[in-house]
Image 1 (spheres, rainbow, N blue to C red):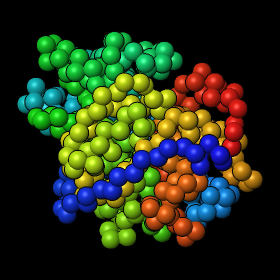
Image 2 (cartoon, rainbow, N blue to C red; image 1 turned 135 degrees about the vertical axis):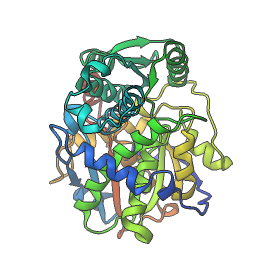
Image 3 (tube, rainbow, N blue to C red; image 1 turned 90 degrees about the vertical axis):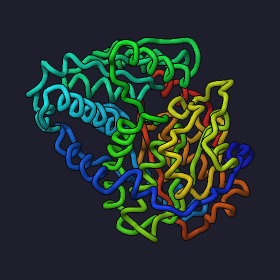
Image 4 (cartoon, rainbow, N blue to C red; image 1 turned 180 degrees about the vertical axis):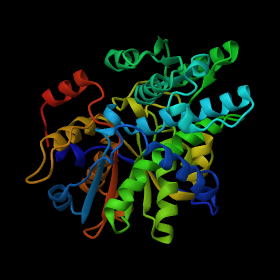
Length: 395
């Protein structure tokens, strides 16, 4: 565990503003509608919540519960819940407007409006998983799909989206540049952006994306029985973290766990937002291996929730990612084998590093702590996974 003990971690304390964002920004109705729809989809089944008892004992916490999203709808990621559902909601709103009548989600899902859907193009920028979910949803619902990716997105992830029927446009620059181009070309051509990040005047699709993620959180809560003491949540633009934090608050109330946000030190926009107590963009100079978390600008809608719910913000270096992936794939004693992608292990990597160093005490971790982790993806790029597995473990 030497690599974790020496890993540099930065910590910022959340200001914890008082408010009702966990109920107002994402309401119980938002979550309820998403859960009611997605659980009707062909292929739906809850993903595993696995217990890492041996690892918990080794690092000195009571319990580690890892929500493994690798099996989700065969797409390998929790993003399957968000992009596809948001696409369905965009189609519902647009068809209802064009046809002058209420069009239901079930009508679109069942193919009643496939000819009309074929005239509505949906677009988004992605690091991989959100775009794959959107492409999958568009294929199911019959809508054309354009996905914008930046220079560092792997070809394996690009090909997975093409195989689902999406037109994939690779650009020079980073994730935020791809977001800007997707918005500009959609406006020029009358297309509809389905993004997981919000900006002034654009909120409904990202709200639907975050509502879709609640399926995962509800499954975890029902499987746990008792409220966890801590939840470690990946950063990115903040959509995953905000959705999970809001659903946990609605489900557990005053027993809701301490929320720790985890980001790569090379893309720490939420950490900087916490330090400045305001949404803060950062320049990404070098891409992190945690591709899904390589985001320089927070979602303002997500920040509204996190500024009230998140207690702590930590950053981790790329050096702990590979060892954590290998630790899951080659587990201690009787812990289950979990094959996880680079972004999936951020929370676990931060937990191990915190306990190996001095940050654990700062986060209030001890032998009684019950920690919930969101394993946000499985093997979404087999070549990258194989390369990581081939490296020396050093743990």
